Image 1 (tube, one colour):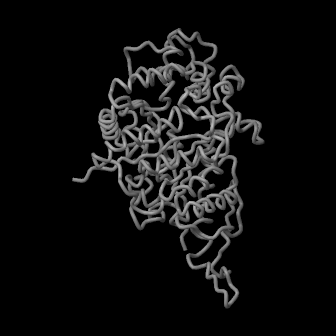
Image 2 (cartoon, helix red, strand yellow; image 1 turned 30 degrees about the horizontal axis):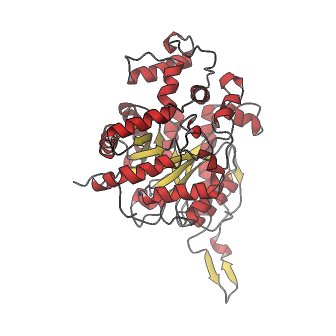
Image 3 (spheres, one colour; image 1 turned 180 degrees about the vertical axis):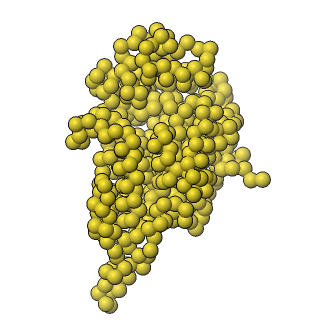
Length: 455
């Protein structure tokens, strides 16, 4: 029986502080270099050396201003602000690598499908078929206010808009240009045959796109579709559209419940449940020995920011945590949202008293998922066990001190995972979708909704 491959994605955001708050101050961190091409090129080359499937570049379109009702705390720790456009760093990384894929977050709420279809096709051309799209609907009220709305569009309606958005881009990517539309006949003077290029004539509730796609098809046509929402609407959307799903939870059993829900949704849509590849966010702190790794963790923890962590979690929960005494048990709160948060953490450790301070310390280095600490052998053991229990396909590995954390993982842990047959020595296939579906399969599966628009 073959050993399942552990699929790995690097996780970054084009900003200073993403999952670890305050660690930009650590002397080994070069997070402040996020605004340079060389930083992103180095990151991509590290991950490709480690056999990662892709680099996932997250994004958010608004500042974090729930904590204290202003953006000050987020600015002090560089949490998502300042930030750069994630799309613009990809061509440079693609030019410096030949196999690493790139998954990028773009919101359907603040884009037009006609324009985004061209953008993603262009990126698929420039990466030679290594592009993926993490589809989000954007939850931040600050984004809504700064992008022309008086208030945020209701959650479920954002997903209805996203569903129609996907219909439009699928029509553009899969149905507008036939495979042989570009003839490049110099003698006849025909570059593209007009008879083989078709308007999509889409007129729906939210979008009207009558014309043809602006771009000739790329090797994948439709980029690999990722999704990260776990609400009922989000999981239904993932079951219909996603090829990769990102989950964020601290306990493997919780991740297993999410995995089963997503796969059940896919099956209900007539898809093979295992067409969904599920990835859990995780952070690794490693060293030559377990003791060295524990010392490394203590060093990193000494730089974490209590206020920064609370500011980030305030935005995630849509609850201002600034009014709470940092050492008062959260269980005493009268706020429904905070009680829900307490339920999550007490499920993991019912014997611990959770206060704003202990919560911030807990998420300070590995915010969003499990923290694997130890020698390469111990980390590999824990990752294998977590993957099996959670019924996932791999991990999105965050880097609290970029790019040093990813380099340490590749230098120390990847050789051990390769020795166990978990990480490939050579990439199999040329496109990101082939890493999902196997060599020779750069196009969406026949059961994927995009395939319905093929000509």
